[in-house]
Amino acid sequence: MLARNWDNAIADHKTYGSVDAQHRLFAELRRDDPVHWTQPDGHRPFWTISKYADIIEIERQADRFINQPRTKLLSIEFESKVREAMNGKPMLVRALPQMDNPDHSKYQKLTHAWFQPRHMRTLADRMDALAKESVDRLCAMGGECDFYNDIAIYYPLRVLMTILGLPAEDEQRLLKITQAYFGGGDPEMQQGADLIDATMAYVDYFKGVARERRENPKDDVATVIATSEIDGKPIGEFEAYSYYVALASAGHDTTSATIAGGLLALIQNPDAMARLQSEPDLLPEAAEEMVRWVSPVKHFFRTAAADYEIRGKKIKAGDSLFISYPSGNRDEEAFDRPFEFIPDRSPNRHLGFGFGIHACIGRHLAKAEIVAFFRELLRRIDHVELAGNPAWTETSFLGGLKRLPVRCTTR
Image (cartoon, rainbow, N blue to C red):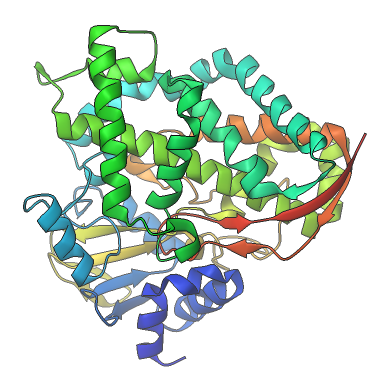
C-alpha cells in the first residue's frame, strides 16, 4: 500500500469496521514503517506508532510524552467545532485520559480504592447476580439473539451503575448517550447525534447527579466525585462532570466490546471454548487474552514535550503520536502466534488496558466482570454458533462489535 493510502486509511473510521482490513494495514506499518509520519486528508499530521516496544518506550516516559492537548483523532473541521462549543478549550472533557501529572495523580487518587481488587471482592456477589440475569435473558429469548445489543451492552452498564449508585430507571438514557458518544463515524451508532451533542447530554445528566449527591451523599463513586477536593478546594465543575463521563462511558463500552468480541473468539475457536467449559479456573487468563484479542481502545494520542528519536525518526517537540494499541497487541516480535486466540496465553503483557501511569483505572473491574460473565455463560450453554454475520463499529477510537447474531443451546 502506498504511504498516502496508509495515511487516509489510518484516519478513516471505515478501516476499523473491518477487523481484517485494520490488521492488514497495521501489519504493513509494523513491517515497513513502524514510526510513520502520517498526513491524512482533513486532519493535522501525526506520527503513527505501531510496534509494541515503541509503545512501551513512549508510555514509560509520561513526562516526555504527554496527554495534553490532543488526546484523540479528530478532523480539523471537528476540532474547530469543539473549540467553538467549549469557548476555546481544545477538549470536550478533562478527565484522567486528558490529564498529565501532577493533576493526573491527584485526580486518580479520588477513586483509586474503588477500582482495586480488594473492592472487586465486595462486588463479586452483585456481578455474579447480574451475570446470571444476563444469561437468564439469553435463555428466555430461546437461545437466539443479537448478543451484543441484547446482552453484552447491558451487563457492564449495570455493574457500573451499581458502583456509581445510579438508579435503574436511567439505564436506557445512559445507554443511548454512550452509543452516540462512541459511535465514531458510524451512522448506525450515532443515529444523528454527534460527539458534541452526546457529551452535552452526559453533562446535563451528571450535573443533576452531582447536585443530588452534594445534598444527599451516599456510599458510592458518584458521591466521592461530587464531594471531592483538589488542593484543598472543591473539584471544579468541568473536571467533575468529565470524571463522570469518562467512568460511565469508557468503563461500559470497553467491557461490552470485550465480552462480545470474546464470545466471537470462542465461537471461532471451539477447542478454546470446550477447554474453558471443562477448566473454568483458566477464565482469568482467558479474560486477559480477550482484552488483547479485541483491543477495544484503538488509540490515544501523546504529544512530545521535547525532541526525541525513535527508530532513527526524529520526533519534534509538539508533534502528535497516534498510539495504536491493537497493532501493538498483534506485534509478531512481542507475542508468540499473535493472530491466534490462546486462552491460557502466558506471559500476556498486552496493551489492552494501556501501560504505565495511564493504564486504565478500571482494569481490575473489567477483568472481574469478564470472568464472572463467562463463568456463568459457559456453565449453562452446550453449544453456541453464529446466526448471521457479525459487524464492527466504524470508529478509530473506541469500540468493537455492533452486531453479533448467535444461536445457542442451553443445559
